[in-house]
Amino acid sequence: MLLAACHSGVEQQDTGDRGLAALNPAPRQTYAFVVTINDAPGPFAVVEGSAQYDVINEQECGRIVASTGRAGRITSQEPVALEKISDTEYRGTVHLDRMLDADYYDRGVCRWKFSGAGAMLKATGADGETRFLSFIPANRFIKGETKTRHYADMGYPRESLNDYADYGEDAPEGFKPELRGSLFSATLMGKEARP
Image (cartoon, rainbow, N blue to C red; front, side, top):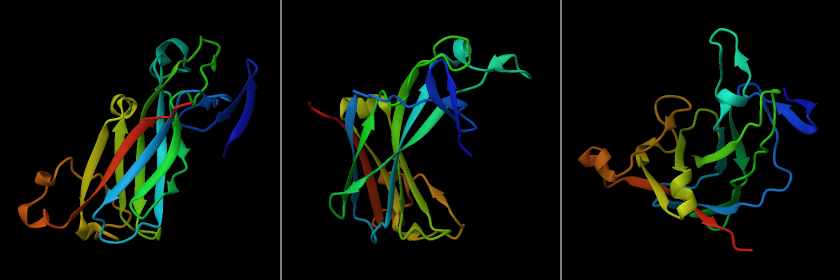
């Protein structure tokens, strides 16, 4: 359940684990988020993106947890709509400054920082299917570098475990030799948008 609140003139949403958070109404640091799939054993009906943001000064600005006397971690995972460009490429938009720096708890301004972007792939979207997950950290995303994860074809469309989260491997060498000829990959990249 989302609760809208107004505090210090900032519209906020209470989303549970990240507490109160507000979206920047005028983000300016815009990047294209590119997801490229290679050698997939079949199509993906579900390709979803997300951007991770963390408050970097939660001890100075966050709500104090009574049991510890310290502020808890403040984080937000925001959805990123990905548009299908081809059978192998999807693109979306990530704003590094998507979250609004604000005084959420009357303890000082919380400063948000983009931590990275992720993608989740599912064959048809049916319950129980394998979720192929990948993530590129902010430093690589901002530099325009890539992050590739490799997955075994045998996990498509599902593993023996329901709703299995497959994080893949950094390189084919992370798999048994007999599986290395039956792999696919997802490559993530950020690209600064030019005005």
